Amino acid sequence: MKLIFLGPPGAGKGTQAVKIAARFGIAHISTGDMLRAEIREGTELGNAAKSLIDRGELVPDDVILGMVKNRIQREDCKNGFLFDGFPRTIAQAEALEAISAIDHVINLDVPVERLISRISGRRMCPDCGAAYHVSTRESGACDCGATLYQRDDDKEETVRNRLVVYERSTKPLIDYYAGKGLLHTISGDADIDTVDARIREVISK
Image (cartoon, rainbow, N blue to C red; front, side, top):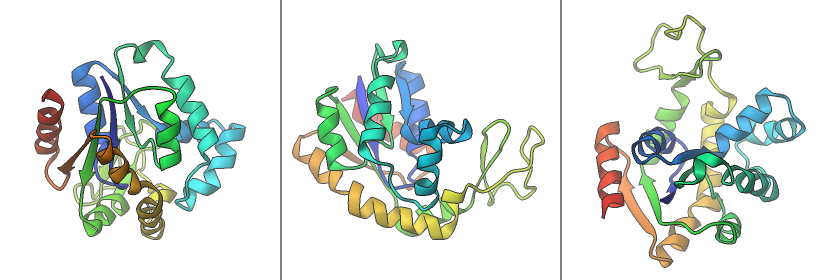
């Protein structure tokens, strides 16, 4: 099974992708996580991408596509995979077609102001990678004891720019995949388990 999760930043794609990938035994591929790993390691790619990501801009297609092509050839993708945050443009979607077929495209729909609240309130642990929200984590500390921080691309000004970029570059993918009969739009404005159940219902059909 080969899936794509679409939706604006903060729609819950990553959270739902982890659950679905584990349930169906397929690889969860997040291009955002792949890029952040490059940045942490200080690679040439990471350094080049950091300034773009910090401003909420998109990383060039050739860089992303090269990473994706290498990733889906790994052993853990033999039963399928789930793309979280890719493709982000029509050009990327067309290039993906030359690499692999896709079974379903899940689009998570969430109101804009809810997205801004979700993302700008997110705090990350620098040690274990756990994520929290200020609405439920007032202490500012992770369970592992580390001090939480806000990613540069989670700050409100950057979030609003990310949403503008999404509307301009990524939202056209909804029409693109709808035209191919692959798109399923699901409301992501609900608790995690409810959204998970909605996604599983679509996939099961």
